[in-house]
Amino acid sequence: LLLLGLIVPARAQQPDTTTVTSSVEELSAEIAALKAKTSTWDKVLAALPEIFLAGLQALSPQDMAGLRVMVTLGPTREAWDGVRFWSNPSSGLMGSALAVCAWLRGAEVTAICGPGVSAFLPRGVQRHDVTNAHGMYEAARGLWPDMDMGMFTAAVADFSPAPLGERKFKKSEAPDGFSLDFRPNPDILHNLAAVRRPGQKVLGFAAETAPDMDALLPLARAKLARKKADLLAANRVNAVGSGFGTPTNSVAVADARGREEIWPSQSKADVAWELCTWLLRI
Ligand code: C5P
Image (spheres, rainbow, N blue to C red):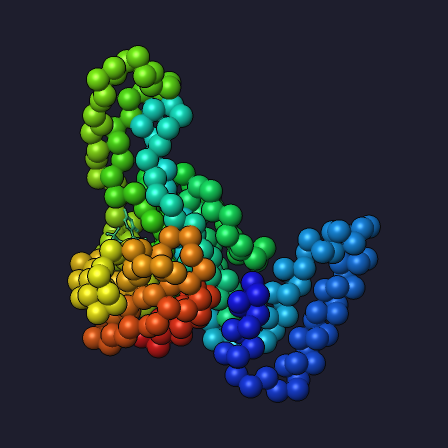
């Protein structure tokens, strides 16, 4: 939130005095309304992020107003017995940064969150919680026809283990170890990009292990084509300060018109802001 607080005023068009006055008025009104509603100062403190965001929203360009944006974020968990699962360490931070940026810029945002996503989402963002890849696909498929943009940041498990049963699998059942069969999961981005109507825009991500940023760009280009996305951001998951769970990201970006860029490591909020701007222009 603090990062966004620094970024948004810098990115907003020079606020004129009317914008500043009205944002201050909106903030004062929010605080007054909260004071009236809550009996303790603790409750006001708990609401500070929302008050802060209301101020940021008032300062942001409303260039995504009227757009309906769906964001998938976080990991998925694929159960292989009654209590254990196959997953990855995605935090959902990149997706929450995109959801917050789109919301600040006036979009109506729906977030489909994998399990364990604790990244901040404003109350104005509609949140759907899902557990596994099939659940995420069903939720996204149902919402997609009504959306203008899809931002697919979730680290969806590409495969699910065929479950060994509903109960906890016992160590004594496999004294020499055991194997699991994995079945492919639906590729949400690929399937929804394939059925998009004209005007619907698709942003995809790629988590890649690459030796350097130059090697990342061809991977972004290849995934853009394979997934039929409009814009694809590949990030290095094997570099310090980039990838799963970090507040910053190093990305190589490619779009379907052939424009390509490599961005230096920057905050995920900054990456999200730039990606929203790029998506609006294609
Ligand atoms: O093929 P890969 O997993 O590298 O592709 C990454 C991109 O595809 C991300 O945008 C991710 O959210 C999306 N994806 C998906 N469904 C899957 C696998 C990936 O939407 N089953």
